[in-house]
Image (cartoon, rainbow, N blue to C red; front, side):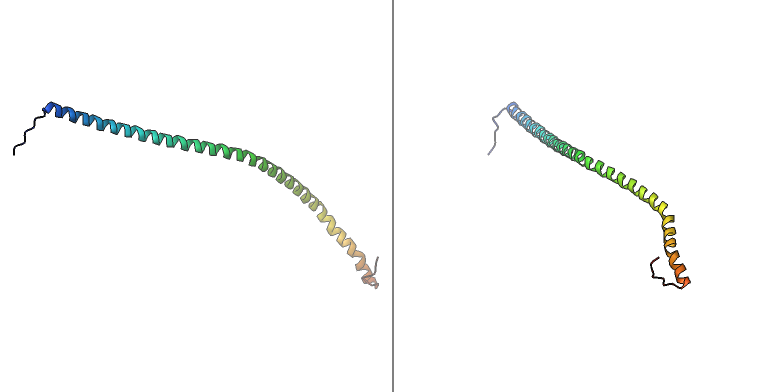
Length: 120
């Protein structure tokens, strides 16, 4: 059996052209949709990161006040420690002199024959 094509070739070309145009439109729509979705995802992600950054900055400001208090306390501790060190330096010589003066009468009493445990 012989096939005879009664459709004019121009009509077939038109149909092929329309199919190509339709495929190109579908590809374009899909491409634009993907770009819009990816852009939306990036915008949402950037917004979430910005909100998190703002929240962390607020937390940082709150903690900075505590850090300032701690630094002030550490400065006070250092100042008190300097005072204590200077007092210890001054009293170091005096303390050894006082101890030797206290033990001095006991030494003389022990040598003189009186009991070393007797009160002065």
